Length: 382
Ligand code: CAA
Image 1 (cartoon, protein in one colour):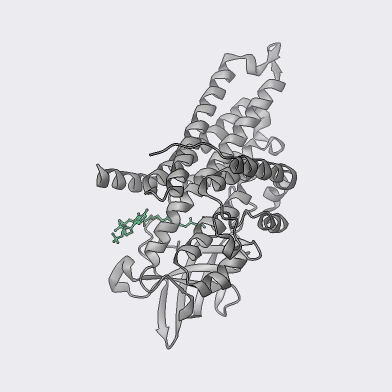
Image 2: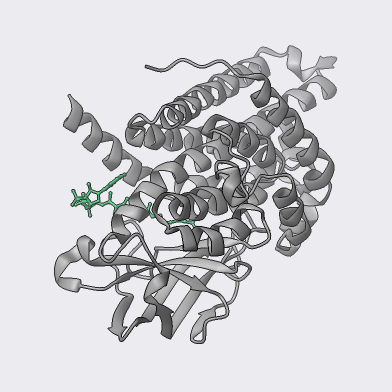
């Protein structure tokens, strides 16, 4: 059953994350986008404020908050800069969550604590040159050698790839068993043979850092296997369910940011003798933009509430991501139209929002994959 009401804590998170985003992230967003600069100092501050391990227990250095709080903070941060949003999302949903859920007490102490406090940064290495949507077809392999495992292969599209310290790497340990032969390894960046490649020159989220990673003969002690041999694919899929709530919230932030900019501009810009917000052509656009954004917000919150209530949220997370990513692209595109020629130049920021929005329809499962997940869940349960 879905119902929610924001608590005082939620309102406080909104206010803190909004103030932080406006004062610390917004001023340098255009410049970081232009020069593809990773926001190292901002990420450090996000860690100090508790944004890097929002749902992790305070026992392991986290903020011990719920998924609704996470959605609120992700929206506020992504509203001004979606690059900061994805850095935060990957660390929270794809790395900290898996370590807390499947890790041993020693792994939590050693790896989760510094990740949750923001002292270290995490990355999630599932995709490969020939295994994107088709994630069960992992080519990267790990072979046992005494009490170590030796990993060889190539990972692609790794967010936080050149900047992270701790990586969750998925590899085949028993090819015969298909996805049940995939294992998750915790790998430190300093491991010999672990080589992040050059940063990708991307259309959007340019200040986040994406790269390929080559692994040649990387030795990992068996104590650094996360969750047991052969459980890697389950860890990846379950982490991605939560990750999709994070990306939905990121997309929601982009849509909300573009919408607010369009409203503000329409009230300032005068044409035909009045602010363009008084023209029906613009009013109808704003109405559509707000409906799309609000629908995405409700689906995202629904998925977060189900997660907080420990109910099945697989379908709702996929629906939230599908809907919010579509809203982000459409709302950002319309925001440019409302701005006219000004929307096409960097200073007005809505062109960056459109560029940033597109990836939300691709990473953490493309829109086509979300359709698969939703329809399978629907048919299973009806
Ligand atoms: N939640 C939990 N389990 C799931 C699941 C989900 N959402 N989706 C699939 N599974 C389980 C299935 O139940 C099955 O388990 P059992 O055999 O135990 O029943 C297992 O996974 C394999 O599923 P299928 O047999 O259905 O395999 P498939 O190949 O037909 O479909 C898929 C699998 C759903 C397409 C999956 O490969 C998938 O989700 N692909 C998308 C991968 C993805 O999202 N990649 C994002 C990369 S990470 C990224 O972008 C991070 C970044 O840096 C930003």
